[in-house]
Amino acid sequence: MADGYSRTPRLTKGALIRLTEGIAGPLPQAIAFQYNPETLSRKLTPWQPPAEDAAAQQGGQTDPQAQPYNPEEVIDVAIEFDATDQLETDDPRAVAVGIADRLAALEVLLYPDTDSGGLMTDLVASLTGAASGAVPRSTVPVVLFAWGTGLVVPVRLTSYAVEEQAFSNRLYPIRAKVTVSMQVLTDLAFPDTGANAQTGLSAEIARAAYRYTMAQRKALGIAGVGHAIEPLMNLLSL
Image (cartoon, rainbow, N blue to C red; front, side):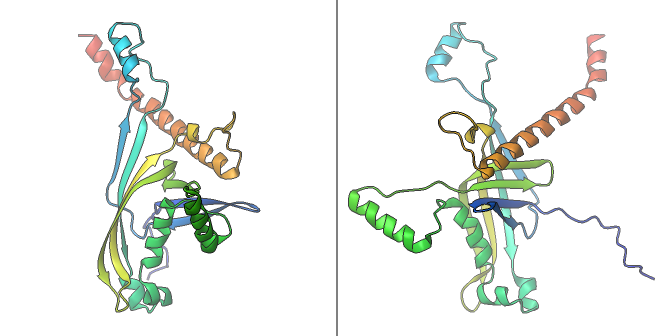
């Protein structure tokens, strides 16, 4: 007889978390993946010296091992959305807009963060800016990419492509595949000192998340080195 206990582990879902500054602090808005992507691509590009420094390096005047900054990291994921199950249970939101709300939640991460004035304020500001020859722009929101406890980093979405694959009778998408490219922002993108210091709690959370992930990565790297000691000793004994 089943006792209601399942040995199946609960799956941790990846998510993009938008941090919006509110009166009482940052308001996290999590966009959890309906299905975790089967693959996740990460690319690390080490810092390269400017052209003039590279020329000097060839003359032996620059330390060839110089690495003043962390590598640039890019994460690519393909996210799938499907409202089929919700439509079968007559979920009112799925019936009304399919997955359009989830797609919109992702897409607004690419737009500048605006004030509480909303769309009308944006329209007035745009018209005013257009009249003066310049359209005022704000900054994109602070976004965290969370992939379990091992990877929680602030990111900026640099590429977004969506393939809408099926539609409701109202022509809202009910199935889609989204490909997202994200630039990982280091803690230097959120300075806590100096003229450009960012003192908001969202920036503090972003700094802490990046430093936490880097500390964990280094700790795992040290642990991994231990497994290579014996083969190294065998090699040196040859």
